[in-house]
Length: 356
Image (cartoon, rainbow, N blue to C red; front, side, top):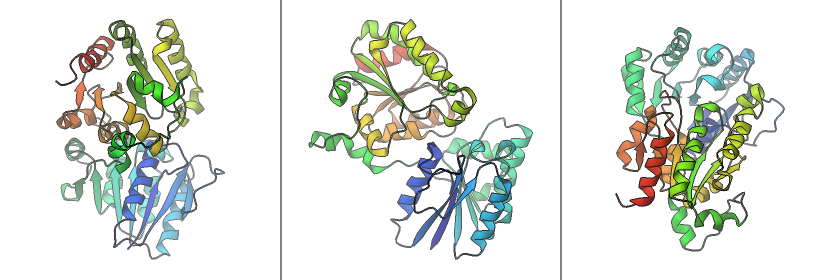
């Protein structure tokens, strides 16, 4: 079987691109799969691409989507997998992806990474049209399936729930380190990796944007470190490219000022890189509690939270959709949105009562 994919893809710093790369890696391990050819959506057309790339589509060029679909019709590709999130495709609400879907000759399987409970009329129109073109629609949680059904955006028999996966390296890294494996993650602090392992480490990783609510966790630190001065909060990730184009490093600089104003500079460290899976595995192996203080309930999937749980971390999170779905893991504690006091209390409970 020959498969093609349409998505963002490394080296573009994008969580869905990482997801698509991981899906390709897993599919190539399946005996019946001969090839998985990525068609990548790029926001910087001159960026060098990986050698396995079949074709690049310029995000803002509707014609590129049409040409990519027509090119596929001249190949022996059997099925096309499309990773969907409104912001990674061009046009209003990513509508250019419909030009690809409508022109495509092969069966289309769509994975939805965003399902809003109250989409705008145009967002719903784009979503419904894409689902109409698909042979199968994959969602990552039962909540996403429920929302999609309630919206009337997709025929129920098309929908399939496939839980978010994670690289196997994450689950075995703690044991590997105990067996003597040297970490590849270079911690941005004096004393390096051994220093962060000696602290009670809180971490958050991913592309940084105001919706991540990192200022809420920073605001929780004075109360937290007064009781537990060994706490260190490590924020790993570069500013989201779309945020950087619109506002530069304004949000990150605000966070750094807030850290200084609150007097917790010795308890917060920024690492402004987009980390590899190996680096993330090492970071999560050193992490005691992973934090996702996100501000929107509408987040239906989180690769970061999935990776943290796969890496053996406890987690404190606000109650966005995906975090609520992860409660069954037994490793997630939920706190209200925008509530530093509740965040501090939840982390203190992990420190003071680790076995409960």
